[in-house]
Image (tube, helix red, strand yellow):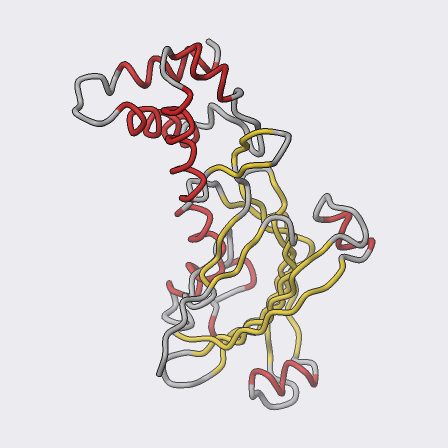
Length: 248
């Protein structure tokens, strides 16, 4: 079944509604994106082709696509067409896990482990986590994926008392910490730009020198104790960090 045929079928399911035609097409396109009928970063058929095949006006097609561009589901590339937007918008003001962010966007989170180990704090970790020298910690280094797309490298250090064992973390670190009552409730985050080095680029399926984002997070429990120190390297072409600002 072709993409256009699928869209036509989705639109027929909406024909009994009182929605304007452009909204029917918008819903059909949104559902097609949710059902993965379009692959990541795939181009939509040309607007002229959609209009002809679906027997609607180009104005209807344009208006439907305009709305999805505003929602962030589609992105326009001048001279190339309309594409499924694979970028992730991360609210920098909300303390959510990578897994939660991906699931909220209909993506499947998974990890490839680079290293899991237990040891004692380094001087930097002791300073950040406010631990005494020799305090035990767990370290988790992994590649985080959304579906089959590598999104970031994550290097996390967790106070050992917050987890029952090294293998307690499966997909979501925060879910594991929540099970023991040690999920952070607030965090300090610092974002900086960088260029991916050769190793980072290889792991993220990018090119050396591509733009990246480094995010350091220090997570705290409700009683003020630090429990997590994490440094993540994100692909710059996949992530947008946003925060809502207001006046005092």
